[in-house]
Picture 1 (cartoon, rainbow, N blue to C red):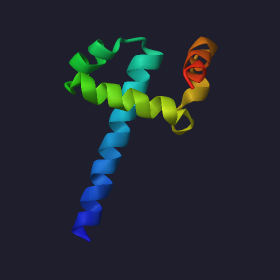
Picture 2 (picture 1 turned 30 degrees about the vertical axis):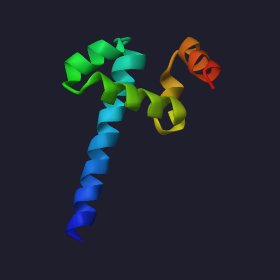
Picture 3 (picture 1 turned 90 degrees about the vertical axis):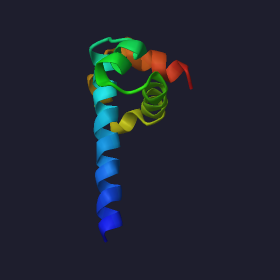
Length: 77
């Protein structure tokens, strides 16, 4: 039971980080390097988060993104 609680807590923390990365990168227009510096996570972690976000845009508040960003992300796939 405790393991399940820890797993859920870690999963929630990862999702929160990805939401923050999404906002910083796509909404605020920060570069990957800036997001890493600001968040304290490594650039490789931010890069992995961005790959996840691009592959799962429907999990994020993507309907608020400017059309040019949606087209850019869709063109990559």
